[in-house]
Length: 130
Image (cartoon, rainbow, N blue to C red):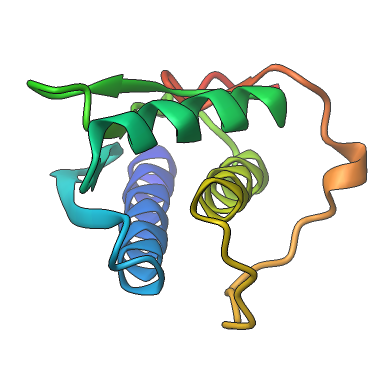
């Protein structure tokens, strides 16, 4: 059915982008784990995961940490999130990591959402859409 295909597609999008982030920031990120639309990005230092969550919140995205040392940024989007909102949230996450790590990357990304129109309150901790 159409809904199931959308969920599968969004889950694959999350996985692929988190893998790209893992490879782009190997000194900061140590693992990606998940299935479907439930994912976690593990950081080498627990403090960094918390800093990424705070930076993301400043950028209008609510995410939270988990794990034994709060070293994992978890993504739990609702199954009904739109593809566009998903891409915006992932872009905010990546930007927040770049800010925390202090890198200005020239690596290409597979999407380029416009941040100027993003309203605050996108929630990727439970991925509640706008």
